[in-house]
Amino acid sequence: MKIKRISVLLVALLISALLSNAQTNLVFYHDHEQLNSSNFNPAFLTSQQKFTFSIFPMSGMSVGYNNQEIIKDMLIQFLTGNQTQEDFQDVFKSLMKRDLFYQCLEFPILIFGHNTKWGSFRFQIKDVEQIMSDFKSDFSDFLSNPEFRTMSLNQKQAFPASAVYYREYSLGFGKEIIKDKLTVGIKAKLYFGKLNVTSDVDGGIEESSNRFLLKTYGSAKLSIPLDLVQNRDSILYGANMPEDFNAINYLFSSKNMGAGIDIGLNYQINPQLEFSASVIDLGRITWNNYVSTMNFRGVYRLPVQFIETSGPDYVIKTPEFSTEADNVNFAGLFKIVQDHNNYSTNLPTTFFTGLRYEVNPKFSVGLLNRYMSAKGLNQNSFSLTGHYIVNKKLSISSGYSIIGKSFTNMPLAILYKQESSQSFIGTDNFLSFLAPSTTEFSGITFGTCFYLFRKKNLYRSPTEDFPYYKPKKNKKVQAL
Image (cartoon, rainbow, N blue to C red):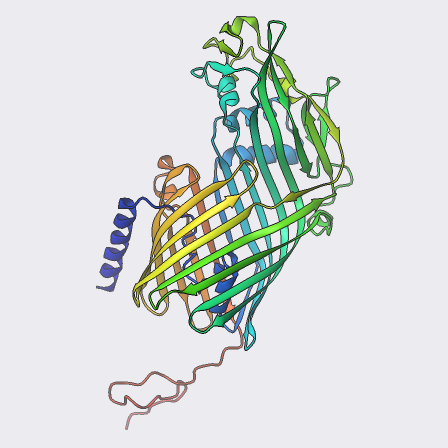
């Protein structure tokens, strides 16, 4: 009967989610007791156990992505040194067809939390990798889509991108300021950057002496252990690993330092309704290791046979022209001039605001708005989730999500708690496992932590025959 009730509940949650117009990508946000909830809001630190401990690989990981295949192939080609000029063009062509590519990977290495009479503290080490890009524009459609045939002249189109990988050392503090009302939290962070790519590249079409020139402008800044290879015409066609590269030294390097903070609050409006808000990764990293700036000076002359007609401020191509055409080579657009000056970047900053309403002691509903701020890559999400406490050990959450421009996402999360530990597993979109063709976004999070130095309960629960007596667990009852 219990299994039937749980099944009915899950079906009800899924149906209610399908009928809603909300979105979510952080199904664990409103479950404050979950190990990583303080990563969303440091005020949630006060919900941790007195001594909380976890270490890699038991601490698990969290990953979410779309268009994974493209980036995987690109990184493999980079790291093996087998890339060719065509590989760069293939990646460029594929990304031009997408509005937003997004990938985020987090895995904690060490977590230690402690509650005291002065407040709740947590020390954490974790690695973070995040990639975002938005290469789809009128200019990219003109190059790759045969049906998009008209392009305005002398108008630049941006190709923003941000890729960052860093190790984070943080010390968090949370405290209840007003009893049963207001809790605040702050987390100080020290960053050690491992990899960065930041694109401020633009593209457009110019007319000069009755010639139509496709051009690339701007720069892409890199801090990555690769030596870019150019031909005699300064066109980028490959990259090699530096001869002095050492993977161990690279992973534990103290170069590329930065700092940041998280701040948050949680306010109990009334016994059933609470409000929370936070700002995460308000910080900056200075890059000074393996740095290179690619200043784009690319030019490609649009062949006359591909021009159907033109005017003073536009050009119309023939349907035969696109990046897929065998006789079209865009190598000239990758002409660059390099410099090796240090630079600094802001980390993508995330803003959370949430509302949680407790329908009854076992069931609650949560609203969440997430806004990620990154130059040229801002995105917003809004969520509605249901959280059900099955028993004192097990709880389940689910909802419906729109992640970026992916509209078919349904998260599902399970938290299992014991006296000495907790384990959790969740996915941003379990439809990606059941019906991969219906959605492009996938994600999963999981992990385990332990509650140290807990006092052992030496007594069993009272029985119906002896409601006021707790027998010892190691005491043997002998038959008379």
